[in-house]
Length: 344
Image (cartoon, rainbow, N blue to C red; front, side):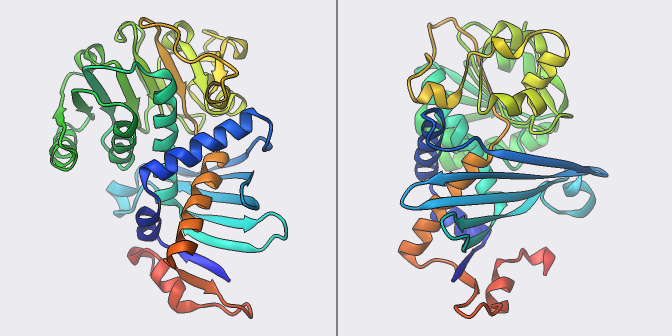
């Protein structure tokens, strides 16, 4: 039967630790040539876009997953809807059987944050006084929780163009995580004071510049998942050690794409893909003064790794409904449980 997992199901099943382990293992397998490179298809639609990311991954059996995400940055203000909405379909790659259909919002947030955490494990300084979260939207809390699984800064700064949004984020996270979290009005001062920086915005023009960043800083650039988005100044990319999740993809849609287009650097200047660092094929951080930028565009490999982890946990714990029964009939009760309230 095809399992149906809602957003709440996925969040309950997939802990940050489990997702980090699954994503790190998937990156390692990619670098070792054990899985093919994931694929992507993107199309623009008015004020938003759609993309499909797909990948294979063989664990206890061969799996295939395809994620369809809609990304509409104005949804909150205009419609009261999330920026990102979509579904992940997980299949048995040996016979094509659909194993699960699951909400993609939690999968996307968790696997993106997991990639940041994996990169931080290998590329961020082991000790730092402060970390900075730029952009206090839907991705921010998940990013911070995952980061704190692998690094423990003394304090966390939160920056957003909407200062009140940053204050609300800081208050809620400080109460939940028992760590000092402060909203900051001055981005330049916060960047200069932080040795770990995570940018998770929908910006279309860079806002982290070369002169802001101090030696020894690790920057996880998460927001540029389409060719129109940009967070990091090309000059900073050119002067830093650049590691990508998938270099071909980052050349097309990431901050690397903008650095190449500006003539600041070439593809050949990319130090490594994250999987190569995880697998020990390329070095991680070289010294205490090195600036490292992780260009995180989001891959289907992360999606399939996270989806498999959620599915296997659901099978073990019998969490979730079923959209199709043994005879192929549609289970409308299960489908209604899966659908977000605003879409019913």
